Length: 232
Image 1 (cartoon, rainbow, N blue to C red):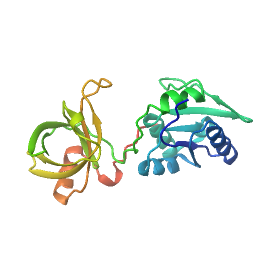
Image 2: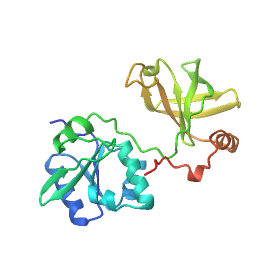
Image 3: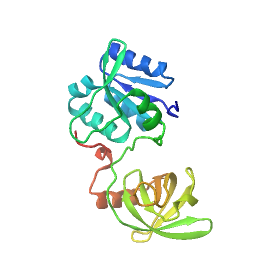
Image 4: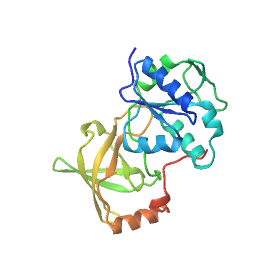
């Protein structure tokens, strides 16, 4: 059975349940990182790579306020299996509405988590903004445009995104505002994959006060409060 390349986050408010879920994953051969709250899991996901989240359903039901919002955010970002524990057994629980999940732990680990591209949780919310771009790459300037922008980076549409590699450092020029931004490739989306626009996801290496002022204007947001969270 193929296993996820990165650990699985395990979330439960109850110590015994958290330990039981962790033990089940370990017996299956998967790495597990136990978390006593959803906010703890979020902090880990902002800093490291994880392949999914195994969560105690009663903890989701009991979560309130910020915890509820973070639980919803994690479940929308990572492959998620919501379960109840019965003794040493793990029972997946179906959810009403649009929430879908695997029927058992083996499918969750081998089919869903193992094919998920591990990546860090986004810190800032993406805003749909179209800006013309010039990307300096191999002594050429490539024309493109942004699909979205955030305080942490941008996605630039490029029909030959596979020429870039994760970790490439690029200089991006935004002619409209006379910006020159240093950025790093975090993700590539080739043409024809998953019915999404092709291009590159970039993270900003640094921003000066002038660029930050413009981002605040075009996104109508404040950096300190523009977290990438979804409504519960």
